[in-house]
Image (tube, rainbow, N blue to C red; front, side, top):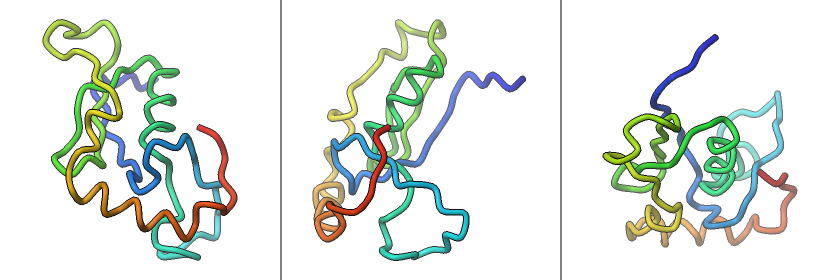
Length: 110
């Protein structure tokens, strides 16, 4: 069994605070139907991590690589943070425009 202490997951912050996952397509090849129509939103990834026993503690500067730590480890030194607090870089807000043309496409809830 694999039980990492730290997990870093790439999210698609173009999806903003929507709780969405793009349906799996075994035939997918980038860029597919649209360059951002793949992966999952930060909110969906955070929910998955929480279900697996991890808490969100940070992200890279651009806000797309989320850093999760297993619950019970270094909680005083690495407190949980909100998804919203990590989506502040100007490129994140620019990325929201990329979601606009595909906002009504098929998505799953994370």
